[in-house]
Image 1 (cartoon, rainbow, N blue to C red):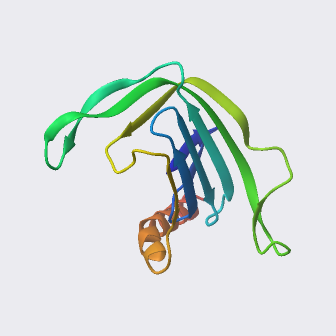
Image 2 (cartoon, rainbow, N blue to C red):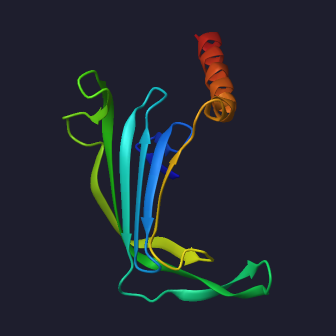
Image 3 (cartoon, helix red, strand yellow):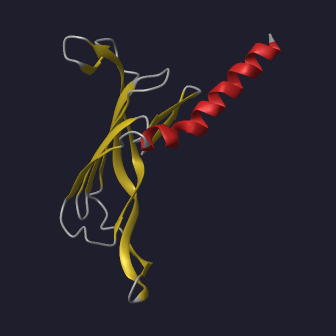
Length: 159
């Protein structure tokens, strides 16, 4: 998941509102992409973290066979870049595409990104895509739908 608070808005890119992809190196580079294609705010985000100025700190983590052992690596010295673009449906492409307007956030950076790797079986580059299918997607969204309904009722009653 990639979740961002920006200018009083919450951007949530999770499998139950769109799709996610990632590429994580054993150490040094993380690329996370997410698209929110349902709800009132459609967007795409990309977060890249590079940690090449620190080897990280090796920490203990629980394992199934050996108990608590040095098994993961953390750092808060990653250089992070974040962008968010609005999306809209394209009949021509039959998919959501970036709106040609200015990005919501264009290449915001920080040199204090928190990164971690650990465990297995990810000893090499770990790539993946997460797409949640129906009916699971609808079931996971029920609490969100109920919250939106409650907020609408509350706004209506306060008018």
